[in-house]
Amino acid sequence: MKLLVFGGTAWLGRTLALEALGRGHSVTCLARGDSGDVLPGVRFVRADRSSSSSDVAYAQVVGEHWDVVIDVATQPGHVRGAVAELHAVVGQYIFVSSGSVYASQRKLNQDESAPIQEPLESDVMESMADYGRAKVACESAVTSVFGSERSLVARVGLIGGPGDTSGRSGYWPWRFSRPSNSSGTVLVPDAPDLPAALIDVRDLAEWLITCAERGTVGVFNATANQLPFTDHLATARSVAGRRGDTVAASSAWLVDQGVQNWAGPRSLPLWLSDRDWFGLSAHDVSRARGAGLVSRPLEQTLADTLEWELDRAQPGPHGAGLTDEEERSLLAQLATAR
Image (tube, rainbow, N blue to C red):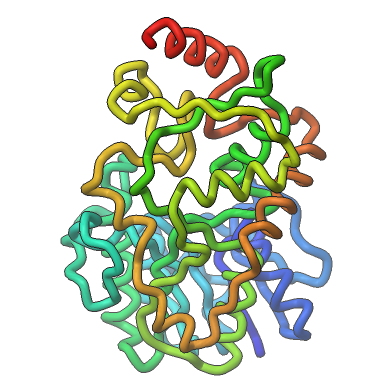
């Protein structure tokens, strides 16, 4: 199989390229090359998809036939340009979208038929507030050109595993492994009804390459390890091998203290305070399971992620989570409030 990956030097794209290479496929990666090194055995094409002229961006690959293209883009203009230039030379287009495309995230266990947001009209997503609409626009660009018979759209949930520079999947095993205080106490949200989900980047890559080999088409929700957030925390704690206490703070109190939801600085990763967003971690994935999606146990993903976190040049919270000082301060404030 002759495979063209847009990206391929950073996390998911690199994992996809590595998986395809391991199965003996010919892999070309088209990217700017700013996000990481090129894998040995991969043909690298340096190009900027943000170029004002799409024919320039794809000039080095438009003269060849590609069995499959895999695209992880967020910017609608990137995808619109790619499908316009390559529709005649690509057999199948696989687009990695997001569960954020759905019009409502309040309902749990929505399948792929649930209403989605209106597409972003602009070619450029200026703010993460438009992330879902941008992914809808990307989906629309792919399906309008390749149709349902030549495209696969994977609406992916939170991706985790070794190499997660966002810090979201590594924070909790790290925090339980390296408490901020001598008592070993860890601050957690009091969120007994909150669902969580995490798909290992390696499992996602394996499934997408298998779909490419089989010519699988359609729209699929793709996530894994859907379970209560409290169980996710218990797994992270077990993986870390620590038995310190946890202190649960209410969502209202955490919000009042400026603790962020989900990701980013001064956050508690995977936590959501607004029930209108609980469905983000609880989509129906039966269609993807039927199409061969297999996931490893959460314990393995978190253990491997913790190992990667500990091996980093500067171990510690990064991208998401609370610093040691932030957690100690919040624990002290909570103790006083009680």
